[in-house]
Image (tube, rainbow, N blue to C red; front, side, top):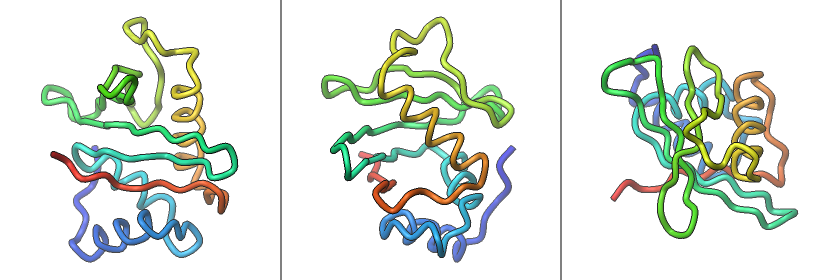
Length: 129
């Protein structure tokens, strides 16, 4: 279960994500921020131009379960789950072999392993509508 964070920590995380400053922002805080609540993030690779928007939402029935969706054709499509701190696609995911899934696996492994993101990768918080 994600720990409660202070408002100052949340603000630092928001600013770090928007400014792509992984060297000044502990990567463990990014992971905590992602799992703190319903979150929409855009992952962008500035070298390839690939850009994927993910929605990560905590289950109402199981506080250690998060559903991961990705925008495909202008709507969110189910991608997989994060459970017990690990991401995996499930049988219900039609996108388990997609580049969107591979990109999320890579991002999750980076933030789970506390590795800094390369400078050409940006992660941006999107506003919930």
